[in-house]
Image (cartoon, rainbow, N blue to C red; front, side, top):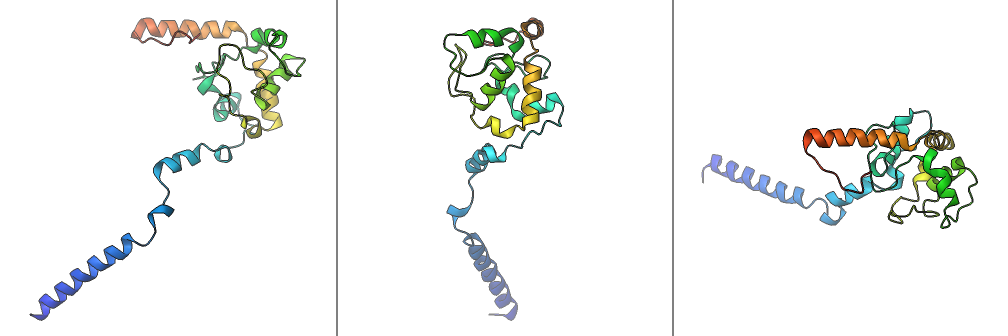
Length: 182
């Protein structure tokens, strides 16, 4: 065998050997799988604390409220998993509901209680145990107070405005929404 051929064989064997060693450098069980990495991103400790220094829109958005709730005045807050957050209209009704077992005496206290202990009262027609119980730990006292103050001023008129926008969009685009979408 010529010296040049020996060098070529030696280089090829070295590359193959290095590739094999590289492939087995870390056991597959210690590598995070894609679905594990995605699940880790949704854990409470990964969600940033909302301090109350943010704008109202940022407080609601960073907290995730718009995903499940319709909130007048908050862009993109068109969720329908939870009830519309128009506590200026519905808050007193909820406090008087025979099923209500909380301790709040005012609409403001009811909102705070609903964030800190969401299972204490679930509005009829909405699924129980849907709102995470850790949301309250991700809001500073200032953020929770600002959110409650905002929500207790929201009325069904704000939802009516969102409904009109939805209906205009339906008409123009032909898109339909589930019937439970208010």
